[in-house]
Length: 240
Ligand code: PXP
Image 1 (cartoon, helix red, strand yellow):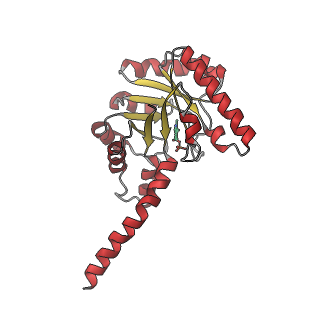
Image 2 (cartoon, rainbow, N blue to C red):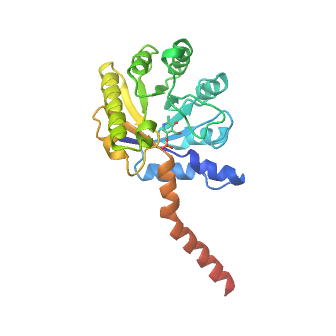
């Protein structure tokens, strides 16, 4: 069975929009876990736009399996070594991007990434590299000592035509096969939705899918009716 990692960053995005205590990513994480999520993912960004340091500390204590998405910077590496998540996924990070754009250039940053992998591995953390489904990046990943790669599904998700989607799916399948043959565990994520996830979930080498935005988007809609009814009940009660 394919494992599901749920990214709760955007629960924190809503909270930070008002600097309010709610909604709490921990509460969302515990609900996701209760619903069957195999791991909880958060990205502690350099600009702290959503998840805060305190969230990571609390989540580390409360969830069964925490996957920390992180840039390869000294500050975040230090935090990761202190918090010791179960898993760390190394991602590229640009300040101005809306979300992670593209995978890590492992081939072009072999020394820096290998050093970070070694340091995190020493703390007993499972390391995954978020890479484009590109054979060059898969091969480079094996040289870093990493145990896992996460294949970027963004181009597949954004492909507009059937032909382009098919091509992207083939790229992902090939990269997954190559990674597995080279001894790496394989996961995938980014841009996955209720409409496009099935074809990715069918790729035999992919053992884990990491999904955030679309699950949070659906959770808002699924919960809207009950949330409004709860408020109406309180208002009616006050009027009596
Ligand atoms: N995997 C990685 C490495 C990511 O950076 C993200 C986005 O934070 C995801 C998965 C989840 O992507 P989405 O929010 O589009 O489902």
